[in-house]
Image (cartoon, rainbow, N blue to C red; front, side, top):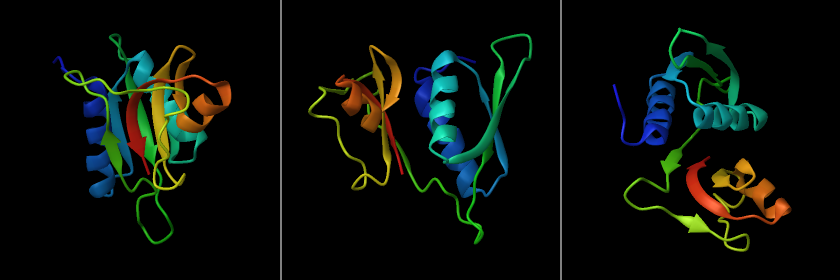
Length: 132
């Protein structure tokens, strides 16, 4: 199965699993999806993740995180740049998501970075998504 926008598929799978209060979600693996997942883990938006080798591209199993009241830690995911309309931001134009409560994730010349990290490094790039 091929996707025209694998990042939108990745975000949609996480959004749907969180809304259905599922404990985990399996996503086909790629380098970019692994980096996005690593950023989610580092920012404590997910409990953990496991890379499963299935003999093909692999699978990322994400263990979602919930509050003690049962509400998902990830409240929203929004795809910004898409194949039909790319969105770029210079180092001084990187948006702040939900008054710095959320994350802007960018694809830069230094790899996949959060907006905060890109500002510190002084690089801009393609705005992949917002997560809050």
